Length: 164
Ligand SMILES: Cc1cc2nc3c(=O)[nH]c(=O)nc-3n(C[C@H](O)[C@H](O)[C@H](O)COP(=O)(O)OP(=O)(O)OC[C@H]3O[C@@H](n4cnc5c(N)ncnc54)[C@H](O)[C@@H]3O)c2cc1C
Image (cartoon, rainbow, N blue to C red; front, side):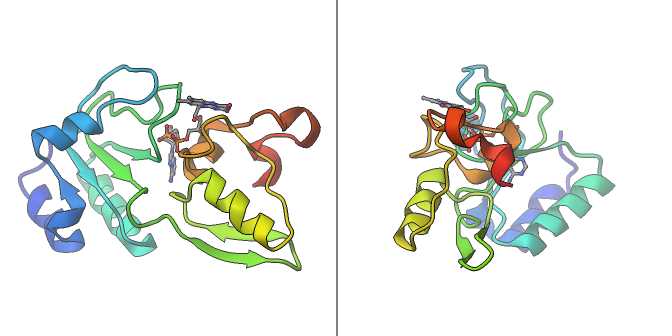
């Protein structure tokens, strides 16, 4: 159960288009690949780091559980709001590749970037991002990092933890 001030606070902070609390959306964000279901009380779409910071501050003050979510393709239940609270979804806005630093071979990305988009972007400049979970067309870097995802290339090149 969220405090009475939550809807007004988050709507003012993010705009109504980035605050979901209607039943249809709560159901849509209630599951992942485990097919278990736990409905959140609210789904929020932060636009940038400052939004994340402001959301975390409010939730910390009010002792509200936050569950980050990428594409919801995980098999561990990590993206499930098993005790309610807020799902923080990164796929809508925080999905950009910010920099590909060729010299240092470092990419700076937001957590909602889809794995395959990063692979394609670095390949265009002659680099290679090896972690290739079978969900690469839709799983996100945030989810990959948190699940330490890997795929067919793991035997030769390693998995996500080797590239963070
Ligand atoms: C058909 C299919 C094939 C798959 N194949 C593979 C495979 O080959 N190899 C493999 O390793 N996995 C595989 N998976 C599992 C899954 O795709 C991976 O675990 C992937 O890394 C999850 O990414 P996601 O964006 O869907 O994350 P989600 O499922 O949304 O989240 C996963 C975890 O990361 C956390 N998280 C997400 N974003 C953030 C963030 N910004 N900050 C903090 N925490 C965050 C969530 O809270 C959750 O705990 C597969 C899944 C499917 C459905």
